Image (tube, rainbow, N blue to C red; front, side, top):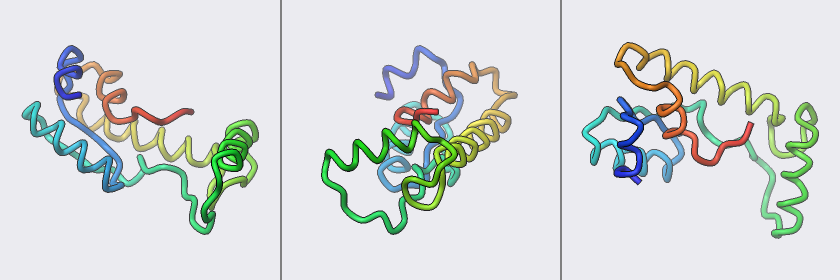
Amino acid sequence: MAERLTQYAPVAVVASTEPKAAETGEIVAGRLGLPFEAVAGLRENDRTGLGYLGDAEYEARFARFFAEPTALVVGRETAAEAGARFADAVEGAMARYASREADPGAMAASSSWRTAR
């Protein structure tokens, strides 16, 4: 992964504070010799209290989550709220690293592989 990102000339690696994301981000940053930052706003949507869902129910629930972005469908935040939180976190990180002559799109792409808005 780190080697594939070099073509974008990133100046930092920014990831969620979620353990897998943070661990991956730290490894990638270390291999590229770049600073690493964990940002709470990049976490997945708050699914507190959701419990286990089978595959079909999970897919149906999240299809509705994105189809009805202002409805509280999953957990404690709507898709619109999660998207706004995520966008704010990405914009904040981009602003912090903007003076380092990076392509902001490369920085955002390297920190948000699974997120849909």
